[in-house]
Image (cartoon, rainbow, N blue to C red; front, side, top):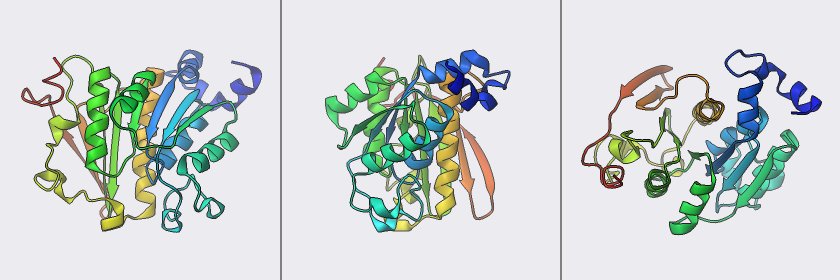
Length: 253
């Protein structure tokens, strides 16, 4: 670290759990962020600000006026621009030392596997189950930790999948029929709406968990799903275990 970095990250380095070694691990880290919308915006901005050295941003969409109520990485002048370009500009202005790579595409198949393989950690900030299932499968196959978040209306949730031996994955929680079971109410924001600060809360928690994992500090949220009822400002914690019959992680053994 140079003198400017020591000053920039001084408030984190002061933390006994972080110190110079943890900050250096952040600087050496590589995070893949899938989705640069309401969740991905605070995720990307906090990871860049905290000093994660390499960020890969993946999103195929462009900025729309309706996004600006909550997607804080973009501004009015960015309407019509690819979200990855708009977000990259915001991140470079925030921390020019952070290496930013952009993937303006819908990551699928081998391209998704390749992007996951190259990263130390993946943050799923997407808004649909098809993408979440695909990202989970790629992370399980590559053994890459996954930080998952979701937010719609006045409800949010966040958890971590370490994807090491005997750990549960996203499909251990949710099957492939999103209209059935507990995830049936988790439609996307375009269908159900969302209160702006909610995605900031959940996205910030995703960034926090990613920083903890990359720096090797604290206790990760693995095996615990935090559920936020923002209307009452109440948190609930649900513990979960690996499904021995999971079609993804059990089949990968």
